[in-house]
Image 1 (spheres, rainbow, N blue to C red):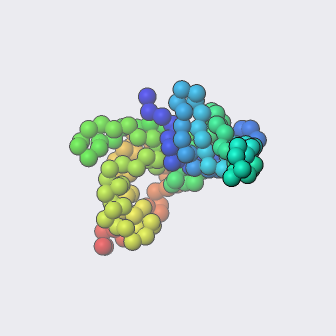
Image 2: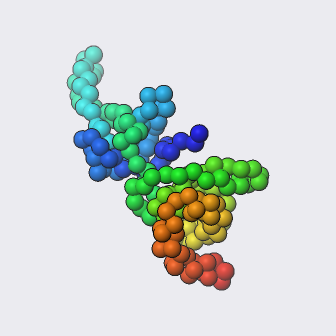
Image 3: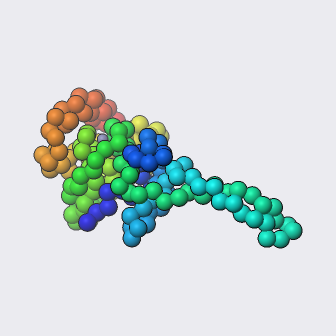
Length: 169
Ligand SMILES: [Zn+2]
């Protein structure tokens, strides 16, 4: 099983006191099924001075957030989405499971190709994104079949220009 929420994901809180807020996953406790998310479930801890050098103070601590109260924010469409799983080939040609956005079908996990492309085109984040597009296309097919097909059409138009640009370079 591949985890649906991982460290460094941007997630949206869908229930509880922090519902509606987004933050970055700092850590995950798989046994407890909770995550620590930057800025979410802040708890005040009172620390009493134990010596003359110390002063009593209140510290902000991040409390655990139930994983079921979190949704991954898709880096491509920017929405809080449900996540599907698809299989792609890694740099060694081995099958690798990656997460896919069920709304726009973009691969959420960075593939090896995407990483390499990002390294090559380090100038701007936008340029790197464009370069990563061809790598994202292949695994999308199986995912697209599984997910609602309607969403696939929407994303296609802007990709053409990106591809053209990449070709020209
Ligand atoms: Zn998406």
